[in-house]
Amino acid sequence: MADYQTIRTVGAGARSAEIDAGLRAHMNKVYGLMSVAMVITGGMAWAISGLATTTDASQAVATLPNGVMLTSLGSAVYLSALRWVIMLAPLGMVFAFGAAINKLSAAGAQLFFYAFAGLFGLSLSSIFLVYTGGSIVQTFLVTAIAFAGLSLYGYTTKKDLSAMGTFMVMGVWGLLVAMLVNWFLKSPAFDFAISAVGVVIFAGLTAWDTQKIKVTYLQHAQGGDSEWLGKSAIMGALTLYLDFINLFMFLLRFMGNSRN
Image 1: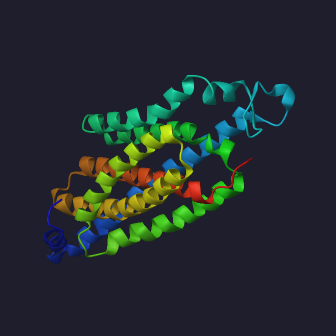
Image 2 (image 1 turned 180 degrees about the vertical axis):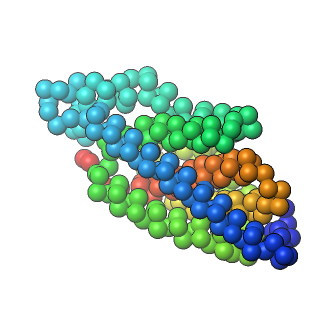
């Protein structure tokens, strides 16, 4: 990342007001795209979970250990080999999106983002089988409040967060390794520690990514490339979307009430 204090001087000249207005419009677009994606994800997760479960034993083809009864769709989505495809497909789409962003138009990139959000909603629908709906809503609201505060801090602070961001990215890789190890160990204490660290990491990434989106805009604002700015807003929305989802999932481990 370029020197933050240098970037801050971009708005000090005659075009200050124009750049500030452009930045606000850019950030509004980022948050708007992210919000639409969140609605798509939540709607898909809720709809699929409703179609995949039943309270009528005559329609159930399988029953989970916690007593949740699955329809044929639920059995296919959550119990068959298809579940691995559903779990890994969003990750594949993220890498594909990063590779294809320069070739896609802004409209095509936005459509890809929304398709990704829908697929992610399908993979997240399983949380409704594990946690009560009330605790999911409560955790979502807490996440939204925390995310708003962290993102606002990242946007308004004059402190360069790039060093912290680099540390947090390294922490994500460590977190993935720890989660893989605990997949075999199945240690509740280790799982608790992973959840706590996950909350801290994605809280930090939320602030850093917000600042990075802002700084990137200021670096390119004078170029006036509307196509690039449109794609940049979509990539920024995707980044913050992933921060929100991960923060939500780790908080849910603490706040979620089991359906047992």
